[in-house]
Amino acid sequence: MESNQHYQNLSKRERQIIDIIHKMSEASVMDVLDRLPDPPTYNSIRAIIMIMVKKGYLRHRKEGKKYLYQPVAKEETVKQGALGHLLTTFFDGSAPKAISSILNITSSKLSKEDFQELKQMIEDAEKKTK
Image (cartoon, rainbow, N blue to C red; front, side, top):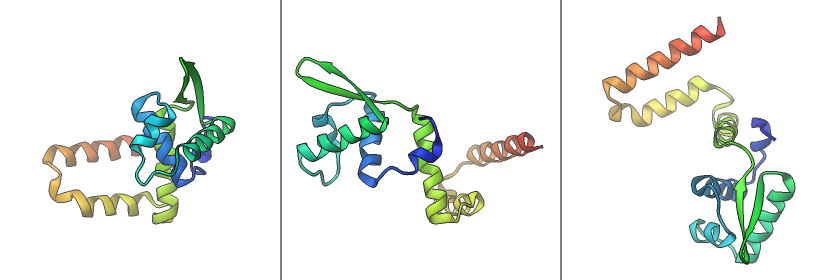
């Protein structure tokens, strides 16, 4: 289940739900419903969550009368899947195009230390590929 590719297949609503549950570590259907933008009905969210449980994205435990849902995958796996989806969808799979876009948006907000950190990350990544 820890495959990045698998998490690229989440629908927009499933991604919203998994994001909410990751941020909370564990959540009830009502917790998710309260945090969703433009939420559908309670029963719709419950149905989507149950599908996500069957697909293996979420697990649950019972506490009193309600079920609490937790993500199966580590948050890092989900982030990698989302980033992979973003790269494929908007940047033709190109990390340089994505980074260029990020820098165009944020470069005026980055400090000297931020740029130094980015340079170090690039150097470290380059060393790993050799």
